[in-house]
Length: 495
Image (tube, rainbow, N blue to C red):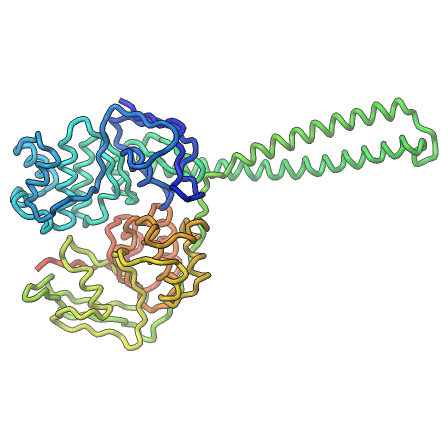
């Protein structure tokens, strides 16, 4: 069965920024489709168009119903089993148990309040419920944002054995493990390819390389044709001058028939050159429109006056009387890029906040270097609001530099006019990252910086960190990013 999109055009009310312009393609409902593209290009918008939440021009036809993940759950204080039965009323209890077991979820959570489940458990429960629906095509939007490395692997194995869904994810390994087709929103069009993210990226690089090469050839050809057209025009002017004066340079009266023949020949040659030039210009204009401008970012790390910036000895944190994680000992030295790892609920974010100075009950010794400047990226973007200029003033950062970084991360100038609360999840995260990149710091503490961030921006950030090699402590579940960036790994174990 097919999902057919024909001549789709859409823009938000009151906006001059057209999200989709006369777009047509088709999808098979048996595909495991990875959906990729820069933040703000319209991935979530397209999913909502499939769901019928916006009015649009064109036509979308499908013989299957759509379900969106994640969706809002009402009355979260109810037991989890009640929420599943509301979603899938005709489902047998044994089917629910089987589906949850595939996601390594214990049966007893069915009798716990949904609101008391971890974010990872909630993700798994809702995915299992949606896949119990028959003749439904799932629109899965960023399922990995609240999953640790083990959770991602579990969900990855689960989705490998399913079919009939669109998966929005920026985790390269996650996409490679699951999808068999890729839907990409490019700068100028939307295209569908068979394969996973890596094969799509390789094809994209080949296409970009070919177009850049063709662009250079046509550029040189246009220069040669322009020069030839200029020479022909000069010759034509000389011939025309001879015709008017009736004498050539030696003073001899020329043959007017010959001059006429020569002039016509030159005119024809000029028309041929002009036609070739126009054809080359047309071909050139079609090239390079989907090449992403992956501009280099800059960072301003400051050298610290001591080798050791921060030291923890047998440190553990407490919520009330409850120990969060087993005691941990490590130090952060100049040039370290330490990946803080551990499952959901092991206290990674709490430890970062403790290092930043938040008052959390602590056991053990933590010694922070004097005058240590820390730049922090939070995983929470919910408090962001207002204009970019007001935010830059509040954070005491250079506004022009801030906007320049956002431009390099894929923002358009039109987006600068919007309020931050109207940005996509990825754009909000980029605001936090751009703020951090504007700050001069000895230590960069980043908590899940890549949540919602598109793949191309992830690659830009990797390149930046490998070039400037700042001292860092970070939490990140993107396997490829962590393997490339981390020089040390510290694992927190739940107490």
